[in-house]
Length: 78
Image 1 (cartoon, rainbow, N blue to C red):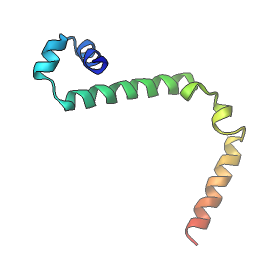
Image 2: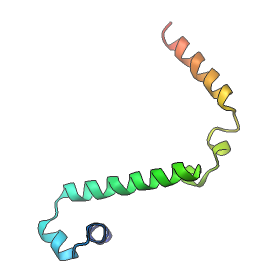
Image 3: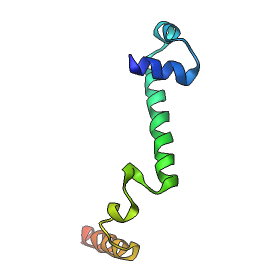
Image 4: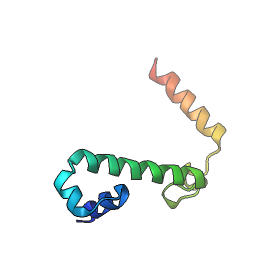
């Protein structure tokens, strides 16, 4: 019921209209749009999932992370 309400509000339709004419594709598009909107918000605020960037990278610097990626990539192709 909440998904039906969400899709109806998002597209400015009555829930009965969504029930009558809506498909699972409408649900998929609505869900994807909200996920993208949330991702943009998290990216803009630099706090994905409510965590600070330092928490997400376990306190490592970008250079340390780059070095680890370079090392992992070079070992992968040996």
